Image 1 (cartoon, helix red, strand yellow):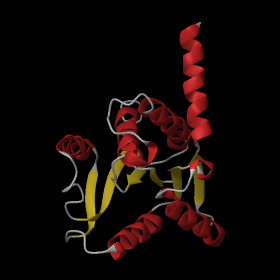
Image 2 (image 1 turned 45 degrees about the vertical axis):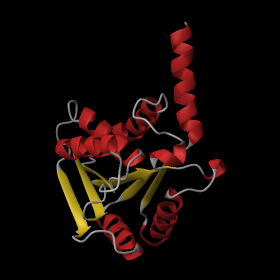
Image 3 (image 1 turned 90 degrees about the vertical axis):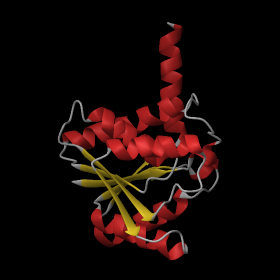
Image 4 (image 1 turned 90 degrees about the horizontal axis):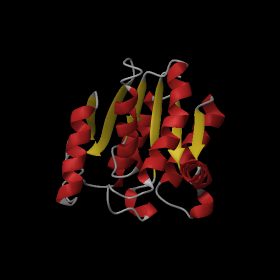
Length: 185
């Protein structure tokens, strides 16, 4: 696998409203734990849609991993121009900081949001350009925006052998539990 799409929940879907939320480091550790073996097997690019939440946390993970794996690259591929326009100022600043750290930032539609067709066009491009999907999603925790990505990945998996890798809330919780246990020792 050379190119991997990484996505998942938006921050608000996880009830995360601050970059200081205690759950974010565990989500990042779960992402890193899945990425490192793939990087060691030849993964070159991590591509995200750049939404506020798992997408941007994954970019942070890749930026950190580049110290150990300098060949690894990261890209944000947005559906439309000025995606962050209506975000709060702190989220905009965070997004711009992440964009400055990644290797490539692209836009599928060079216009502001006009309709769901832009999101569909972005997803079509992302799935066409990647060999697999790493998705932070847990159906048992309730449906959310990642559901559509999972459905697309599973269809492409059946048709073409596209790889689907998931991170569930249980995976993240076990990382948190391990860390807490270690801190109690």
